[in-house]
Image (tube, rainbow, N blue to C red; front, top):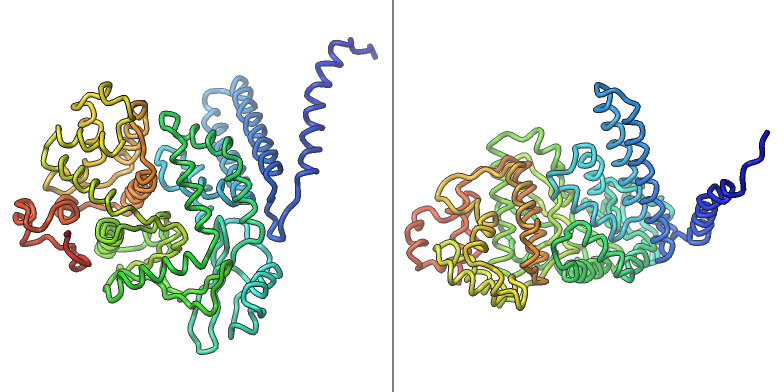
Length: 488
């Protein structure tokens, strides 16, 4: 057997050395919490890069195999590749949890352009992340509430109902017979999120890769602020109580009540609501019931923002439960954005200018609100900005029905976040509004929503004595009942 030349040994040794170094780093940085979460910044970075390398190798392998595969069989090869890659991404985000899993949840329902294999896998992140074992659940509840769940509750299910990015939910029964849902935070998820948030450069890189034409800094800053709030369930309990008060007595909006004595920073006990999950509802609901739910969701969103200057900013399908009669229960109030009233007032003026066709006023207000990058005012053409903004307003431009479709959602995303954004800016408050807007658009698309949105929306942008509102006076309320209060 001939000896290999020295130069070949060197070439073989280089990748082997990198592999040894990688596995050594994995071994050193594999410290996990009792919930199985890698918590150190270095460990999470190494694992993320390692999984990235695996995906690159899978991508290169696919293209190599395509060279030796007939055209007739390439579609099947590509399908297997997408399925394997989607499952790998699901496993990575599900096990890492924290900020990475939150990003996967957002992408799973907002990006209509993702291949179906990715959407099918990533949507599991909404309620089906890998759960922690029951022994760990018991330890968390005892540490937080002072007793084991068997003593605090008449019945406590060991198997979780759902598991997501920060915690998992178990069904239980109080001693008075009340059915409740108990959310328990994963041990170590606070350290994992802190590690992700401390890795500012990595988050900037991920945000920049998703939206390369935007200034990623306000996006990352907003993500940091909201995630840190979500770690404290006492904040979520206060948020949830606020929404209970705002929509008390509403016939179609349901917000589960909170049980403060059985809640803490890492445990939250709420009323258990019986209902269908989003995807089952889409498949089974009648058109009439589906329409009622559409109007209910829309009213909850718009009343919250325009009348109360706040919104539950995590509108993914796992946070809705649907009743057979079309009522909707809204869950998970950990990510609530409290808007500056002045921003909402300015945003109303901006919208009013567009809806009345005043291009000069719209351009002036957009510059004042920093939607146009400082110093770029002379580079942005007034009419170009008007045409660009049309994709925001398209559903309410005409006094007629408009149907939300996957094609519209995809096109709107590509225009809004495409090359056009290089001259524009995204103020911090608008990061959350965009998440709400495009998340809601995707929800509406899946529900087949088709209404006269202009007629339903004018009350949020115009005072009730405005000529436009007077023209709609005979039918200005939504089909789910009157709004909470008129525009001031």
